[in-house]
Length: 394
Ligand SMILES: Cc1ncc(COP(=O)(O)O)c(C=O)c1O
Image (cartoon, rainbow, N blue to C red; front, side, top):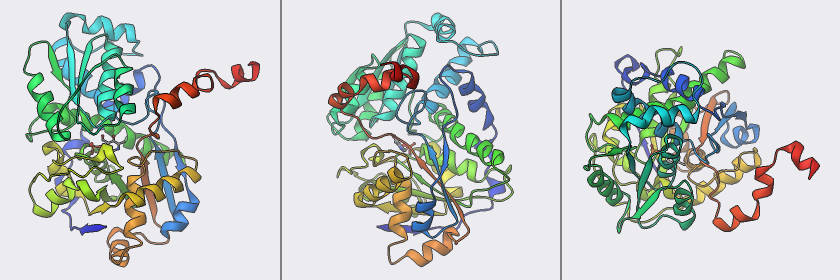
């Protein structure tokens, strides 16, 4: 377990990413299959952490996919194409509308590199649009994740290397006409698409605000958010520091011990690549290079970085399951960071730095469902396919 405690600047300096905070939510709401994901209370987890309340934002099902990633892929693709195609008319959007809208730029191939979830999300967006997708995978990705991407109709290219090698391959492929790279990570600080992807994740936190407002005037004191390249945690940090909140929320970024690229960059004060060649069980967080569009936001607003061992992710996943949220190990990583840090010799310092007091309101995000193998998928289609009422009839 490694801990980095940081002092952060006044939040007034950082509101660039909050400007378009509501636009992605307004867009996602118009899509078929949208509903806000649940925000649930987990009193037993609050007891374990010694805080007032733990709220879990359950992102294990978004637009019928097992992670939040489609929020970024859909908004970034739409916002990128709007420049050429103009906006869709107001009101609900049908998939047929999307296909018609995109026809002037066909043939089109969406390109992405992925540890798993982002690639599946881009493949799904391509399916919505009726265009092609080619997804580049590092060589450690589990077969179930590859199959899930292929099941969206995408072409999958497995690269002989780690995640960073798949990012390079996707970048090369996007130099061809008729392609659009929907990358969730940036190699330059002015890359527009990864910024849009991060904006799209903002829907999670815009919903949290609405859910908190609907259940009284509550605020989150501290959030633990897991990071791969840092896009999700940048969205979380922008939200946490939003001038719309009475006071800022403390942000702790959590990464696997073997791939703590955000911690490394924030400790160094500049982006620095690490090897990340020892694959963690939190394998979709296995990234060696921080996204350059996320770096600035994280540097301004992250109070603490936690690098955790896999065992804490298993403990966290069990705790979340007992709270009613079935999640994979990467999905449980945020909570794992708090569990590990508060059991470490640094516990008192972390507790005081992050304000984890007995009345604190804490947020964690369960970012993905457990990975389902092809065999499991075959074993339970009937239960998944029917509604409760149909199930009664069966
Ligand atoms: C399930 C899950 N959680 C968290 C993350 C971290 O997101 P980011 O890479 O933007 O830091 C990812 C990234 O793929 C993910 O798949």
